Image (cartoon, rainbow, N blue to C red):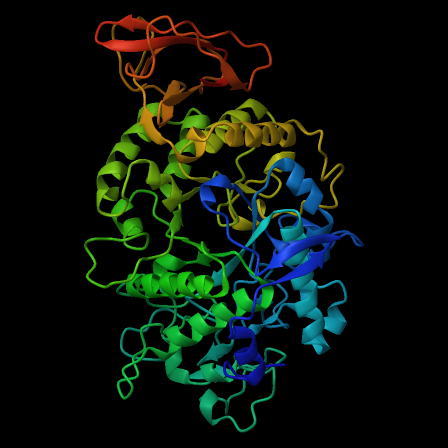
Length: 592
């Protein structure tokens, strides 16, 4: 077991090994597994290891919502890989798998790292063996990755740069403290049982620190690599302070003697090790907003270059920059930003929180279509300094409707067609779509805490049914998305609509119609969605006059309604070329 970033075993793994072929599920697959040519050809399925599946035992009996470990395993994910493949999944975003403090039982997600080089034993089939045999845990996770690759599914691993687990206690025996503006608190490092020791004030001075007390590997054994000033709330900037009990790293720490940033270098090396050791295809970076944008760019570039060095020519990185409105803040982290004067390109993409908020509100009839369309107009202006073309913008955003950090899931069993409408729009909008585990089975949950969106999928009747309406919907949409390249690479234009053929514009009313086109070369794909729960819509939709002559007959590529009305032929209304579309309540059509 490696206790140092520079252990011989770590060095051996990091050296670019010659390409070879390995066998998984009876299939011959290349190693390292090559990257996709374009990540827009995939869509992503996000699952929490602890909440997805365990093939041999039910979830932990506990009151819902639960914040204790439920027992999901790598073997459980591996068992359901064919189910995910048939759904159309191109890549699985897996919640963090690095080892967390083993005494920490009321935290399920893996976002509180204790050892950056070791796999979490609780996600293994034999937990007790994994605790004493790290190589066994490594092999369990590696088998999952290899089996996914054998089915042509990529693995994106969730990682954290901003913080570690609850590895020390604040003075006064507090797990967390308010922000301290005038310096660091005294701290007490924890032993392997989670007990803080009053004489363990400086981790670098603890004689023969027993494993797994404190934090590992040993390069992190310095107090000044940790902020030690309490919560980020009320701190001068969001880049400072702990996330509750999760202790923040000082990623901007500068070793002035050698003019290097050691914490950044250690994190880069640790995550390059994970790429090499487990053949990972991409990283989703948690709380990226809370690290310096300069480090985000250096980290993204380092992962990209390491991937290239071992044969992964398009290693993918995307980050959580939680901003519902601030497109400029998001733009600080992705692509080449001409306002920054360093030579590094940032991470490839960001989670698309602004569009999630607006798509959610539109699909629920809480906001008009104009809210989505107008926001994209703002985004297009901001991205002029980052992307080389309008169509390229889609590669810089991972779009979604729900995730583990929101209190509520989207699906409401009383309005299943709202979910169908929202998912159809999600799969057709510019970006790389991401579906949260359980959406395909209509998993629900809402309340005043995030645990409501983190329920277990397995253990429920027909948990992995291929006959569920939403499973079939997503599977069909995957086929349509693959059939039409414009839905993956195309430019995007929101289209004015009119009920009378005279007054055109974006729908300004709740429960209105959203229309947008994806255009690639000489092909226009038109998506029209009616968010009203009770009113049909008959609208003239503006389309591209250069691509669509009068009298063109439109075909239906996909419809959420099995009994749909065919669209009219292309016509001219005043200065616009249009097509007339008729929709039932909560119906979406994809036309070509």
